[in-house]
Structure formats: C-alpha cells, structure tokens
Length: 155
Image 1 (cartoon, one colour):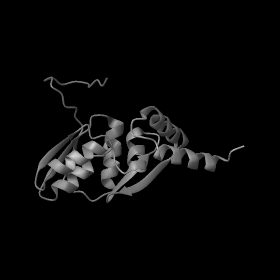
Image 2 (cartoon, helix red, strand yellow):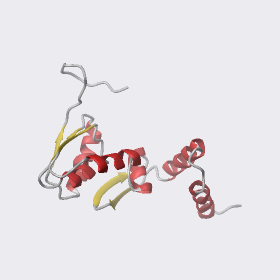
Image 3 (cartoon, rainbow, N blue to C red):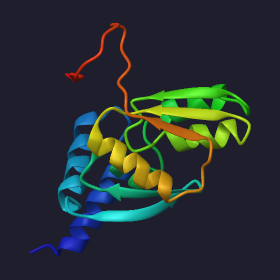
C-alpha cells in the first residue's frame, strides 16, 4: 500500500513535469489539491501582500500554490500600470489584482475595487485589513453596459 505522503509527492512531481498543453491532467491535479485542502484556511504573504486564503476556492488556491492568479493578466498589469494612475478593478473578488494595482500606482495613485458579491467583498475587506494600503476604495457595485439599478445576476 502506498503511503499518502509519497503519493502526494509523486503526484506533485508528475504535475510539475507535465507539458503545458496537458490541461486535463493539470486540472485533475488542481482538483485533487482543492479536495485535499477543502477545509484549510491559511494566512500567507505573497509579494509583500498578506492574504487570508481559503484553499477550497480556485482564486485563493492559485495565489497560495503559484504566487498569483491569472499570471498573464498579472504580467500585463505590471506592463501597463504606472505610478500616479487611478485604476478600476472590476470584479475585485478577494483582491488578487487589487493589491498588485495598489503597489504599482503607489501613494499618488488610487485603486477603486468594485465587488458586488457580499461574501467576496467581506473577504476583500479582510485582506485589505491585513495590509496597510491607503489608496484602495472598495465599492459594493456591479458595473455593466446596461444603465439600470437593481439586483445583479451573474451567469
């Protein structure tokens, strides 16, 4: 019988050596980690930003295991955003991009983080409280191309 820690080690080694185009196996390994860590909540500092991460959540687990969420988006943000800018984070969720934006715009810039979902906004506020950013404003609003007020529907 294979010991669980050896199986985890072997699965991790296998996953890390997969070619980039093997999405199915990568998703399978990610799902395994999410199942393994389904009740685990950790506080972790990534690139100078402190997060409370719920490892059963996709965005949180990406930050925990890989150091960021949406690596290509994170790189694009770093290429585009400059000190002193005012930027909008639409659908800020737990702040995966909000805090990166805040660091990039600096004290002379501003970040307005829009997050309409109560649970995500609570987590965003929690993560903001773990840090000392003073240039972030959180708005409980959904933005749309439709000009009306009311309950938001996400599909």
